[in-house]
Amino acid sequence: MASPYAQELQLASLAVQRAALITRKLLSAVDKGALDKSDASPVTIADFAAQASIIAAIHHVFPNDEIVGEEDATALRENPVLLERTWELANETHLDNEASEALLHTPQTREELLDLIDLGAKGNCTPTSRTWTLDPVDGTATFIRGEQYAVCLSLVENGHQKIGVLGCPNLRASGFVAETLVDRDGHGQLLAAVAGHGATIQPMGPGALLSSRPLEKIPQITDTSAVHFIDTQAATTQNLEVHGRVAASLGAPWPNPVDLWSAQMRYVAIAVQGGCNAFIKVPLSKEYRSKIWDHAGGMLIAQELGCVISDLEGRPVDCSQGRTLAGCYGMVVAPASVHQRVLEAVRVARGL
Image (cartoon, rainbow, N blue to C red):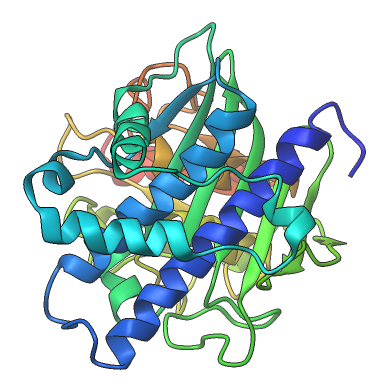
């Protein structure tokens, strides 16, 4: 994928692949009984170790870039046992290809690991910044159950997404996307996009990056009954009643069989045409705003494949407002050909 961001894309892809290995190693420990699945610590260790690993790689090459990460290191500073487990996981997980691993930095001390995690906690997206946003494990509840989750990294410049890389350790190469339909034989899939250059998918592995292929554009439908919404029926922040009214007014199936907890995995399911092509998010609270790391990167992939993404007023999503999508209330994601009709259905269903 020839682009002005070739170095950034390679680094981001390798960093996400290594972080994905960290999360899989942690899940293996749970499966083997080394860690208690009912305890929150496996998720915590995976979040911290993956965030430290990714930030180490990015900050070493681009020390002047801002980084926005979900976690801070307070819990590790207060819990020596948790710190030691996180240190071992982050420090001992490497790509098995020497040339690829040589491009990635690894924390050299526990204090460096803590500082790198906190670097992400302090970062911001502004209208003039070059900022990497990351979510080390998007879909923590499903991660611990061995279902779908994503390791997410994006580059935002001056409020605009430039690169999106999503590592999906349990995603199969093709077919219907569901929580329990996981890749049992490989290391999952990595999706990537560069603004203006389309999107790709490639299998992940333990070493060098494997060959990628372009993702196909999303069909531009005209019949709204062909809108297949992805949703999260277990969500506690979304107005599912309004979602259902929107689907009914469009003649779209509801609820659609594709139901994923991870926000980033919803973009993935659309991108791989895994049984859905749209989603909406009507918050229950007027004050609710999404975190930027739950959407940046995934949004770019969907946009590059033919989706339009807006807030509930039809405005483009602004990625320059800090650590949340502060100017974006709710979301409408749909193929460009029907986005306006879905948006209007949402307005009617909300009683506007």
